Image (cartoon, rainbow, N blue to C red; front, top):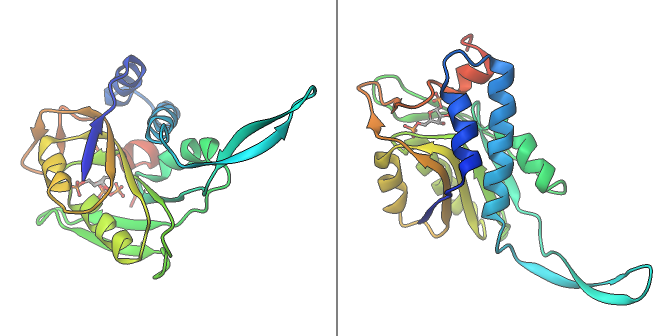
Length: 208
Ligand code: PRP
């Protein structure tokens, strides 16, 4: 899988707000929304278009429309906070949900919800998850989506650890991962350092 680190000062600025332990959940969600808009916009830079005639108030001219709106797949919970931002750019996209929870000892993802159909018939997919730590959750999601017959697969993470990037790069899955920022590494509990804590808890609280 190809990886692009999106280098943009507004990403650094919004990420700093997410990192701050004093940031309340509401502001955290707003800044994650903004980051999602920036990253999805960047991920769609070379999206497939088809030609379309358009009448301006003066003449008819050639324009473009999206060939096919990709399916959005937020990884619940944390990826939910990226969905509105993605939908603001892709208002015609369908949405499927994948619920994944990391086991605290093995760090392996446990899938507790999956609304992705078995046959995606070549449909493009954008996977949304703000955090890429060991890479286990995203790898599982990408494999499942690939096995469902997806077309072009794109994944978007706000913050990644080098270990997670290595896992995804070596996955053998055809597609591209866009990342907002790469941190130093993981602690013993496989949390990203310096990180921003648990992106699910920071948005929705600690009652799970
Ligand atoms: C977090 C995060 C990712 C995953 C990353 O979710 O949102 O989905 O862990 O870790 P990994 O790369 O090591 O798999 P978590 O399991 O905490 O669930 P949550 O979103 O409900 O908080």
